[in-house]
Image (tube, rainbow, N blue to C red):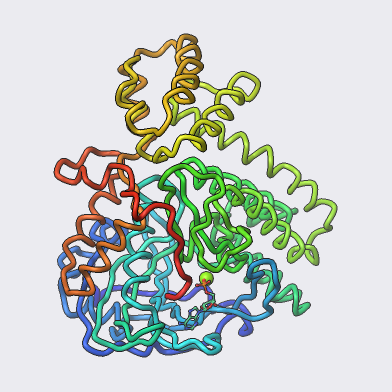
Length: 484
Ligand code: AMP
Ligand code: MG
């Protein structure tokens, strides 16, 4: 499909007017394409040759007249660091419409950084280059890792000046998602006691993300069940892969269980359960280890928002399953990382606890540990080299050796499976910073290289090995500012 042939629809605009505000994008000045996502274009049935065209730049800059486009910003509220903010909304994201694909359903396109909206408050509606590179690369990396996420079709650069702590360059990411509905979208209407709109929103979210529930008599209870299940899975995936989101406010939590709104996130360097990636999070509310708890806290906020539609007692009963759902999925994923065919809580919980305790104590790179373990055949040399202390590692490997004796798979089969469950590459912040530094000087080679390894993080990628080692000491466990 040519870009000019795209036909957009706007299902969200069928909701009551309180849910959104129509707004036109404010294009950036002196724009140019930095990167385009060919695989995603193919999924959207867009001809990849179009990605090099002027029309694509126009699309990213909100300047392409596409049939059916009717641009708008969505309204939502949210709990930020535990405090309720009654009105947030898309302050710098402008929805341009929805593409229907035969294989991947409806995908909503959104321009992040395309100017002010009614919900901008004091913000300028812009996004700077560094944070746009981070979102563009990381959303694709999460997709490559098999974790539910929004994605990005293109990254637009510009010479448009945007002020943060200094003057920077503005950029736009064309984000793509099957849903942009957030926990906070429900909180907005519930708090205002606008129950008709709340119900309409619930019906919309069901049709969008859980269509099998449309005719269910208890659909509002069931959508909560689905979101509880999806959130438990997402949290288990983040913990297993070592991802720290950093700003798990309820407005950054997806009703569809996707990773959304990439800000001051980080992958773990050396394993540290208490790691905090967000500089402003002094209390560690959104620390790595607290993410599963915060997932539950946020679900409780959603539960309260839904309570005008379903009795709280019934919702509460559903929420009670969350810890079990989370633990089951986490153990399943960790079992896969260890190459175990099946895992039972009674049998393996001690092995996992021992593992995490060991990792915490020996300053070992989380990703590198599991990738090195994926080569383990009884020879411990490589593993002992990457941790600071030998005894805790040896003790744990003794337990692991014992556990492996119960497995019926061959070493080779185990290795093959572990290579598919332990990425060789994750995008650490020091790597992203290198891409950003050279992009700010007009060189996008590293952006492109990181994009390639992000899309297939389990492959070897000869020539890129320097990204697969432990994070250099001077860049370890840094915190990131929220400024973006
Ligand atoms: P975040 O925590 O980055 O997801 O953003 C929280 C809220 O602030 C959302 O409503 C954003 O739309 C809004 N926001 C963040 N940055 C800007 C900006 N530069 N201009 C307008 N709104 C912004
Ligand atoms: Mg947000």
